Length: 557
Image 1 (cartoon, helix red, strand yellow):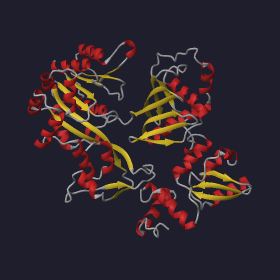
Image 2 (cartoon, one colour):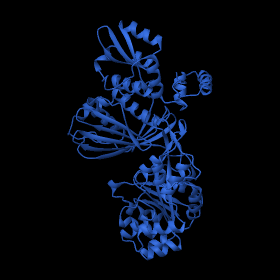
Image 3 (tube, rainbow, N blue to C red):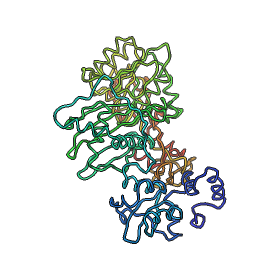
Image 4 (cartoon, rainbow, N blue to C red):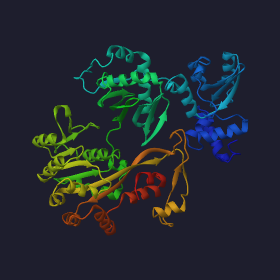
């Protein structure tokens, strides 16, 4: 069937038949896993050849009354989901409509004739989850997860706003615990960076942010939202009695020998509390600049500046662009026994050995500025400040760099040159900025083409011309077709796109003349001493690391 449809060559199919038998998995699963064909393509072919209807959500809305027709154990065992039932006919969704054993078992159990409808793996998981409870389709939840509260010395405080006792009893019950565990375990499994739990008028929306993009996942009933929120609040030592003001908390999850740090933020909305969980997997350690995606030429420019005895190293970009991760990579590279490294963060994301890391405590009145003053009295050689966001922090950071310290920090600007003018705008004299600033690193994150389903492709000529790619250039345009490994997105993982501006004597003169950021960028580009974000993105597109579409979504050209 696949050969006739032109989806696979005969020799490749023969090889796939041999391999899938060795791995003891179905042929279709093997083809999808290896990125040879997508699950939707297999469904299309099988549907046409066997004249079996494809699952369509609009034709088969979820009917909760079907819960009693087939129990969850049977649905999970045979990977099926009931869709529609009349007196004599039951319509079910299944991955393999040729599974005679499954069809016979369902007919015997229901005493009803069964009509199969073919669907993909993702669709059957969604259906089972929606019918029988969130994530029941993934084969159970992690009951042995270990939780560690954000602050062992703090206890959750309660007021008389709600009946706290009854809520607390409910959230400790097994169904709620399993539900929360399942959400967390699936988020970690998918490599999500954030989990959004958002109440609507009549339902709850749960979304995972994977590789920078949000996607919906099966959500629990609206009646469960209060208990889910309260369970997570208790884990994070937050006040479950207060829902009318924003709260923040954190806790640690230990699962599969990995330590997962989770930060929680809540904010009241018109339909209830909105909760966002930031997930940070610290088991992988701190990644090197090379693995982050920085080019060799940029690393060569940055390397000598990292070891300067004093000066200011800045990482710039929007929220979520990986600025702090880049600074951690630099700290990892320069972390030697003969230097004292101290960090001032909110919050501490990665834990580093032999580095004194300080967590803010705003309740005690500790800000970036006050904390930085205290750190200066600890005889540091290198100081990392989580973010410079106000004139006072900027002034103290510059003074620290002037007095013989290496200072690393982040600012929010659109490009590398923007960091220079940002400091001037915050009231720092131009001569001070020119004398202490060593380098400004602008960055963005783009999704990588999935290695399991990547295939050569030819972008439209208009897009190639727009990005300034020469026709005779050596290019290797790649694009993911979508497979099980990348959840049919064509992308898996992310990489950095960088712009490294070295503040040499030429740039120092421009700073003293108060030249605009745009002019600094233009002059350095013309001079050939600055590769822009666009240039690095184009280089990664030409190497097949990402696509033009993905680059366009992250970088303004």
